[in-house]
Image 1 (cartoon, rainbow, N blue to C red):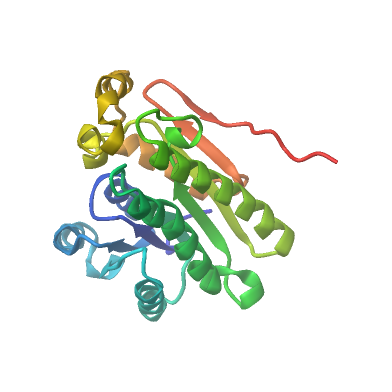
Image 2: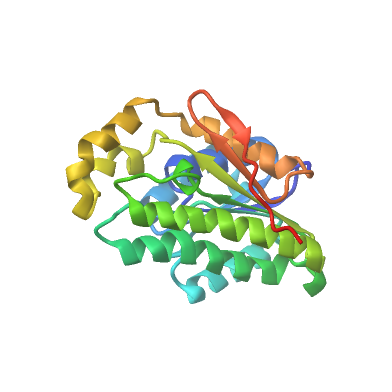
Length: 257
């Protein structure tokens, strides 16, 4: 998929991985809508991007992925502004074991909610033009992060949902590819604040720090992996793991007759 002129949507776009995703999509010719609950950071980033790429290349909308109404309104505004949607990056996420229900709501339910509402506009069987949806999971979606059971559960859920949606889309003729990004620890506020958000597992701080000390990757490295998943039309149902020294596609067991 060549990105020139494509319309992309990034959730959690104002900072961290989402910001880097936004930048790499713009660098490759896409127009990008930034969705985030952090209005001040979102507006600030929009202003900076306007100076570099021009005002018509981006749109910022304050949007909570926990709200059907806000997502529906955002997609309607995107359609009115840009005429369609080709790429969705479900990137919004938190890590807070104390607020575990909120963690599930944003990390997993938010991904499902945005995906289903996006498909109303992208699904070829509904008159959409197809495209690609990339969901930000985590290394914790491939194996357990001992101090963060709920975060681990949500990211396993994201990977399972992504792979099932990829298969369902292929079988149903939706024309939409799905893949999951599975980074290790990344240079973001989520990583910086992880030891403060372990809740009842705060006694496992030292064990968690040992994981972090093994290496933290740059947001730009995650964004490069996003670009690969978006542009390579052979990628569907993939889980791409990236750490400081490993980048590989994960092989999973499959249902057999």
